[in-house]
Amino acid sequence: MKNRNNSINAFALALLTVVFMTGCNCNDNNQPTNLTTKTDNGKIAMETIMTRTSIRSFTDRAVSADTIEMLLRAGMAAPTAVNKQPWHFVAITDRAILDSLGGNGRQSQMWKESTLAITVCGDMEKALEGSAQAFWVQDCSAATENILLAAHALGLGAVWTGCYPMVDRIAHVSQVLNLPDQLVPLCVIVMGYPNESPEPKDKWKPENVTYNRFE
Ligand SMILES: Cc1cc2nc3c(=O)[nH]c(=O)nc-3n(C[C@H](O)[C@H](O)[C@H](O)COP(=O)(O)O)c2cc1C
Image (cartoon, rainbow, N blue to C red; front, side):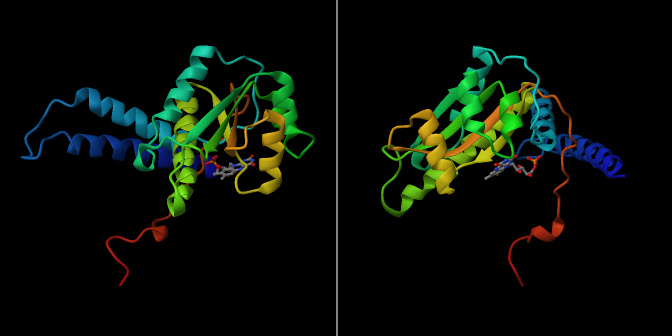
């Protein structure tokens, strides 16, 4: 039933996207413009966003260096406060390091199956100063989501595993990767080609939205 609802929702979304995109096919004066390419891109972007879901089981197919660079480029395309780009990315394909990151914990199997991980770190030497320093978390989160979406678009599966602000996880990842002191790992994105195909979750809750202002 859940799957059926998801399919109906996906179809409704696709329909809405087409209607929305068609509706947007005009300039400020409401004159039609030729946005065919943009419309197609818009549909693909919406589909990518709405069908991404966390993947925690992977095949043994390796991820190529070109694909890894595309993922990193997607991460670095994210917006950052004052365009500081206060980040550093550690791309890991080494089997022993991936296994060490997973340790013997609850999710160690997922790590053993992974063929790639990207650790997204905040670089405190590049971050803003004072109370604005904390923007690094949002900057690195934006990069992380970009990588998750790019991974999905490229046929990979991925899951965000959180580090910051969990002190024990930060210590573990920092130790395994020998991170310099100024780098704080926000998360490790565990990746590979998917060996499962879970349905994306429907998270649309109108009650979580207020238009304009609270009464
Ligand atoms: C900050 C953060 C930390 C997360 N940490 C983990 C984690 O340690 N292990 C894991 O399997 N998933 C982790 N996730 C993934 C979430 O469980 C997942 O995004 C959520 O259940 C929604 O599912 P979806 O990604 O399929 O939409 C994390 C996600 C976020 C945003």
